[in-house]
Image 1 (cartoon, one colour):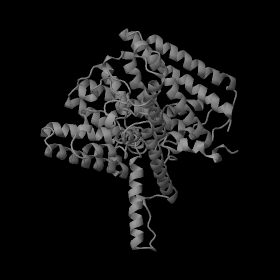
Image 2 (cartoon, one colour):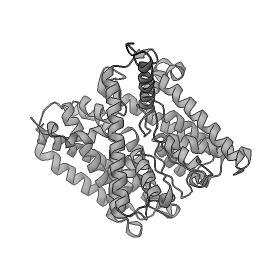
Image 3 (cartoon, one colour):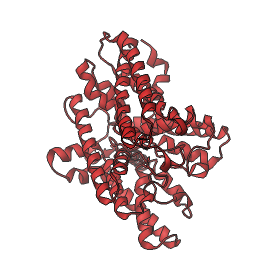
Image 4 (cartoon, one colour):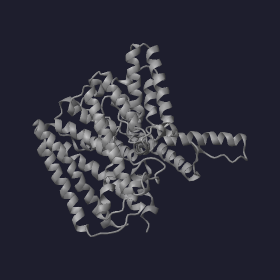
Length: 482
């Protein structure tokens, strides 16, 4: 492991990230909201720090290994979240405290969508745009973007890519060269964003809101330019656009790549993970709509609209809202919240544990039941027609065990700060699944939580974004041994 090499890469990535301060400056000048100076200062600090890390180590040359990739991914997301908070602390009357700014920055970059801000409608346009842009950058992952560029600077990318792409099957590549893979992902991502923006505009949004919501929709983030989220528009057309692009974004990007390359949609219906997600969402929408109808919460048409939107938004871990689902009757709030633990497909921008892991856990559970009946039988776990190696099956159980352990530890930690049990478990679950909305005292916003609880949730967001093991491996003695 080369410290100089790691500093060189982090410096490069920081200087690249500083360029993301330019669009908010232009937005500020366009709307004359006076925020451009804050972003200019943040840009200067970020690029200056990156230069100080890069220039002394620019001659450091060494191929990255997987171990280096883990460290760089964890360090960069941490550094990025901290530097991303700078503009939010420098915006005068709209400035946040350091704790709140870091929370908001990490929430954006990890596409969690939890916010400590109230009065979002009154924020300057540059701040509104910046929050949405943070989610868009975090959606596919700033590291994957860097992988498409760093090889031209003599840095190998596979180690970074493997730590960044979500899901248990990380060694698969869409194209033979990792650089081409990263570029293909970003082309698809950008095309979906542009299409989503045009669809929002056609449905009635102005260009600024359409741009901002396309960023957070395709990223499955959940930030909005309004306190009332998508409910601000009270438009069935806008809700349908949002639902459609959330569903598409929750699918694996490898399926989008195949659909684009082969000009065919058949792969979506042949993929076991995609089929499971379709049936899972359809069942949840039916249960929710019937429950709302039986309890007479709303008339049939509006109840179906709200059921469809809230189920897709929560289950894909976006967190947009058209109604306060925490006030719905019976077990519906709990049921909807738990669906976020499933999340999107592997290789999507969604959070949660990923659909493929849930399928594998269910299939392995059934295998153990069958072994009780047939102790000597050799029973393989299959996804579609493909047998799953025992190594992947064991890794899924290892992930699930680590997930439950960390959830419990962080739940106790948040409760120790004085937060009640419902608020604590829902905020920890929301942060770890990169969901956003919570129950209890945080159902409206996270601003009233104790500062220590917010820092614990920041760690939970980072663990969820990097899928736990990428961070946990850094705390093992074996990682640091030569």
